[in-house]
Amino acid sequence: MTTSCTQAIRHLAAGHLADAKLPPSCTLADATAAITGLGGSDSGGNLGTSRAPAMWRGTTSGVAGERLRLWHDGSTILAVELEAPQPVGGWDKLRDALGPPDAKLPYWKGVNEIEDGQWVFASRGLAVFTALADTELVRVIAFPPTTVSDYHARLARGLEPPREFRHE
Image: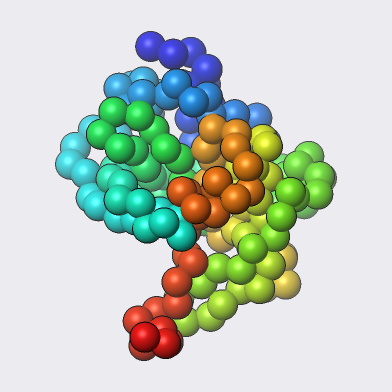
C-alpha cells in the first residue's frame, strides 16, 4: 500500500483539501483501502477535452462533502473528486492556503456556464470549482501534479454544455 496515496485520499475525505497531494503512483487498490465504502461496482464517464474514457466509484459516507469519487483507468487513480466539499476552516481559509491559481477555466453547472469558475492549481494537483461569484465551493478534484493544458485535455470536468445548448 502506498502511504502517500492513502494519506492524500484520507486528507480529501476529511476536508483537509490543501494537504491532499495525490502521487502519480496511486493504485485503485491503495485508494479503495484508504476509505471505507469504496468497494463495489464502477460507472463510466469521460474526462477532459479529449473525452478520455474513465471509470469511477464513489461513496457518500464518511466524507467532508456529498460524494467522493475515484476516477480510474482500471488500475491507476486518475483523479479524486469531492462534490459539495466542506473544507476544514471553510472556503476562505482554503483559498488563502492555495494562493492564486495557475489558470481559471469556465465550466458548466447544469444549464449555467460559470465563467472562470474552475480554478486550476495544476502544479499542486488540485482544481477547485466555484459558483455564485466565487463565494460557493461546488467541487474539488485532486490529481497528480501536471500542467494546465494536460489537466484540461485529460482530467477536467463540466466542459460541455447540456445537450440542448450544444451547437452541433
